[in-house]
Every structure is written in C-alpha cells, then in structure tokens.
Amino acid sequence: MNINKIDETIKLYKNYLRHNNQSKNDFNDRKARIAYYQKFNKESFLKITEEDFIEFIGKLWASSMYGSKKYLVDQMILSNKGFDNLKLILADFIYGKQDLSSRWDKFLKEAKFFGPSYMSEILGYIYPNDYALANNQVIKALDYLEMPKVPHYNYQFTGKKYLEICDTVKHLAKRLGDAGVDCENLLAVDYYLWEVTRLTADKSLNEIKTAEKPITNKEQEFIHKEIIDKIVEIGGLLGFEAKSEVKVGKGAIVDAVWSINIGNMGQIMYVFEVQTKGSIDSLLLNLQKANNNKSVQSIVAVSDEVQLQKIKNESEEIDTLKDLKLWDYKDVLNVYDSLNNAMTSINKLGLVPKSF
Image (cartoon, helix red, strand yellow):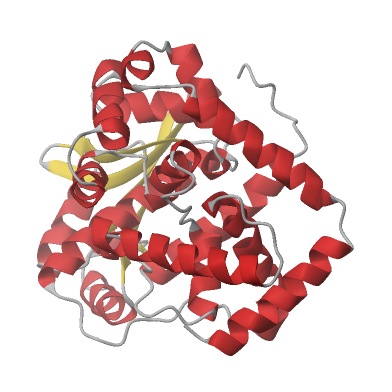
C-alpha cells in the first residue's frame, strides 16, 4: 500500500466530510442496512417468501442497476435451479460452518447472477466488523492505493483474496480512526473508498491495470464464464430476454442469446459465442448452425484482439458468415461497467415502481 496516497486521500475525505451534510445521512443509511440484514438468521432466511427475497436483494447497492428488482430475482431463481435451492446455497454461504474462504469459493463457483459485489455486500451488512464490501468502486480505490495483486476478474476473486481485502480495509479503518474519522465498522470505510475513486477520477490514476503475466488454461475457463455472464446481464439491462447456453438449432448450443418478441414478427435473436481457448473451426461451425435459424438476426464472436483477427480471416472464406460481428471481450467488460453506472444513476430517479 502507498502510505502517501492513503494519507493524502484521508485529508481530502476529511475535508469532504466537513463540507458535506450527506455524511450524517450516510451514517443513518448504513445503520439501517445493518439492522435490516442482521434480523435474519439461517432458520428465518430459509423461510422467506419470494416477495421477501425481492426486498432482501433489492436493498443491495449491487442491484441498483436493475430498475425491476423482480426481474433480477426471477433471473436468479431461474439460473439457480429454483427458489428453494437458491435459498439453500445462499444460506450455506452466509451462515455455514466451514471457514469463510471455502464457503466463498464454493458459492462463487456454484451460484449464477451472484458475483463478489453481491457476496461481499451481504456479508458486510451481517458481519460489518469482520467483512468488507468489495465492489468495482472499492477495487478501483484499492488499485489506486496500490494494494498488491488486486483482483480484476472474478476468477481472481478467491476466498483467500477476499479475506486479504478485508484485512486491508481493517488497516484503512485504523488509519482513518487515527486521523479522527469515525469508523464504527468496515462499512464506514466503504464510503471513504468510494470517495477515493471520485476524488482521483480526474487524475486517471484509478484505472484497472491489465495483468501482464500469461493467462493459464484454467484461468481462461473462468474468464470465459465471466464474459458470458456479463453478456447475459447486458442483454437483460437492455430489455432483452437473455440466457446462457441456449440451443438455437440442430447441433447448435451457443454461449449466450438475447431474444425479444416484436408484434406479429415473432421472436428475433442475437447469438453470441465466446472464444477464450479451443478451436476456431468449432466456433465458426457452431455459429453457422445457429445462423440457419430464421429468428437469428445477428451472430457475434467474442474474444481477444488476436483471436478476433484470426476469426475474421477464417470467417471471410465462409459465405454464411459474411455478416459475422466481432466484439472484443475487454469492450464487453467496459460496456457492462458503463451500463451499470448509467442504469444505477437512472434508477435513482425511481421511475420504475418497486412492485415491478
């Protein structure tokens, strides 16, 4: 960690608190959030209804980009083999007997529509003295403060790494306290870290660093899954029915599909295949089969810059793939972040009724 940056940003944060009446509202807000989530235990959580669960998820900052919390919860239930199974695996993660690191790794691998932002926020409210929030803004702030080996992809976000982040936030809480900033729990540090990203944004110093070491085959598998999840979420935010691993034709199961029904035109679909390893021939064959479906309007190959050029070169030889679209996976991540921020801002207006 860069002590000079920490001390500099703490001074800026103290000045922000002195001249901003929002700090009192922030204190009351986090106190209310903690009280709400701490009222549950494993037994009571397993008894909650779908309506209660919509409130449970809807109160999370991580869900703020979704105007319709019901839509989000419906997707969580559908993607996790039903409501009862979802409650079981989530309760085991939150209240289980195993060490947190093991529970974290198991849940991150098993659960869909739950990333580190959701996971850490739930833990942070229920156990505010032990566990920290670890959303995208926090990661940017820790990157700026030069925490070593900050995770930038979900596959890097192991339980062990999450606990390291918690230890770092505890260190920051002590440093804030020594500087005269009231830190009654780790959630209070989250407000400081959000201000770090805001206060340093114009310096272009909080950008995520790209890992320089080669990515292993195992890491490629995790990135492949993460990119698919992001494409599905982008589609959902844009108003499509978005799913992963969809059969769209004979012998064609594709990574992701956005679909929508338009009046008497019927259903139209946009098909995505993500390539992080394996045969390009296999990817092109799958897209060819998908393109035979008359409902498919566009087919999109998603990969890195080098692979996309190879895909482009090979697809040009195939007549049925003349209109193949190419999408760099880094752009997918950037679009997701930008859309997340935009939808979060729009949803603060409260245009979508809570009952939706």
